[in-house]
Length: 361
Image (cartoon, rainbow, N blue to C red; front, side, top):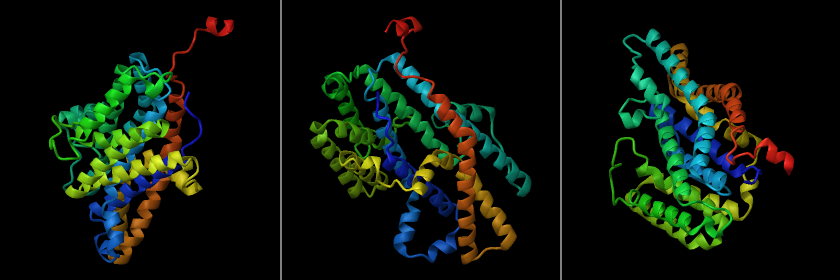
């Protein structure tokens, strides 16, 4: 059984990552071009790189999934149960977000002259199965690509543990498990170092796999101090090449993984950044990430139609759009995501003993 204590630090980072992506997309879409140009450079630099909140998400996923499976004897049946539980946890919100994106697109097509809302059945089916990037379909919402990679991360990581026969009853969960995970880390480094520059296939998870694995490595190193030199080496290699190549995604990944490990070994992971507003933001982060794009676009379009546009009005409508996204995400979390979370908990990773066996104990 894994610890039931909440990782408040992880939840807060998740919220910060989601909000950074929300802010970034308003800038990337050109909604606040004049206002942004009036801000000091350091602030502009951070806001313009908010897209790398995705790197934080990937590292956090690696850490949390490692935590979820660390104390499990991982077998193929357990992998199936784990993927089913993740599916129940993630799919309803994702599918509803697809519906929201389609609805906003259709509404926009009716209001804006010359705009077309055109999605094929194949495109929709591919989205529902997280296969749109692999099959070459255009994203219905720009943020959905990360979910396709997350699903690949989960599945491959589970298979590695199953192939290595992860066993919590032996040191380092078993020689084979740690050897396979180490090999995976080495392979993943080929991309951030620039040794390989292609994904090998369309929609591949490989170019960004190192972010997920460095997150899982942070967890494993927390639980096994003997791994500290190897974790530090992994961080140094990825970080050094990221700095040389000016590759911010990997820099953010290393900083996040290092912060997680430090917070874990100092026990701050249970208390750091535990303020209510950050925890609330973390709770709705998945919903916020999923639906913020269409709501942001609609908020600015309606706002500029009503008031026109200048530096101050861009700032006003940016604030309004952020509030709208937070309110909508909270409602989405209450109506869709939270029920899915509760339902997913009914799927146990460990097989339950038969009623007869339970009575005999």
